[in-house]
Image (tube, rainbow, N blue to C red):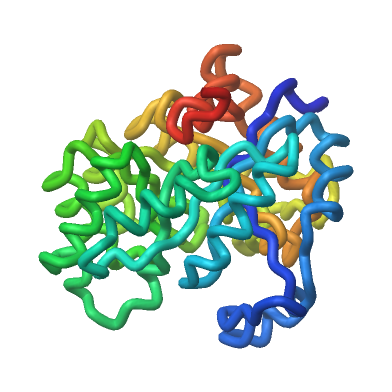
Amino acid sequence: MPPAPAIVDAHHHVWDLTARPQPFLDTAQELAPLRRSFLLPELLPQAAAVGVTATVVVQTVTESAETAELLALAAASPLVAAVVGWTDLVAPGVADALSELIALLGGEHLAGVRHPLLTEPDPGWLDRPDIRHGLSALGAAGLTFDLVLRPGQLPAAVQAAASLPELTFVLDHLGNVEVRPEPDPAWAAAFLALARLPNTVCKLSGVFGAPAPAGAPSLAGEPGGSPAHLRPYLDLALDGFGPDRLMFGSDWPVCTLGASYAGVVTAAVALTGELSGPEQTAILGGTARAVYRIGR
């Protein structure tokens, strides 16, 4: 199936190991193939080949210097349209720090902030008053907050999103759920509870390159692989969020552990191919453009 036009990849990374280490790459042996630099020139021809016309680059380290570099990248690239960066949410001057980032070269591309919640040992991290203060500053600045978490942290995310209706929360990678033949009931309940809040959005990311359950055909790293095993998850996401609060993201280069970039994009197009034209357009680009204010 040919890719739909004007696709927005709402979630990818870049890193240069000669400039900055990426500690997460040392957390598991299966990440060994990613222990090299992945730079934008490598992605550009792959994106063009499958009809991706804009992307959102997302932070990987908890350093504001990386965010400044990503903003400069967006300023120089016609492909990178938005940046989800990082800032210290517990800093007393978090609002000033956000203003400083926005004032940098490319600062107009800052669309949101992400913190690696899945590495936080404190289960009550999102409930802390200093964190809530930082999250409120994001909302006041018109930015979003990407949630990268473990499935068991979803209930805490529901509480945080309910308490901060002025802030848009973006759930990365379906909440890092383990893809099974049938969705885990506990995850599904928390996932739908988050979806019931109008200030939440979900990324269909991080799953297209993941191993398929036993017996299901995987993407095999090439275009044309079957995404049928993801159908129950898309159906659940559509029931909860609807197409206007769902968006596609490749999770490049992490996705290359299981599939090529073309394979991931083609799988997303195939998985959404039975939807109406407007629904598919929303998931493959429209939602990302609205949430991350692309083209403003």
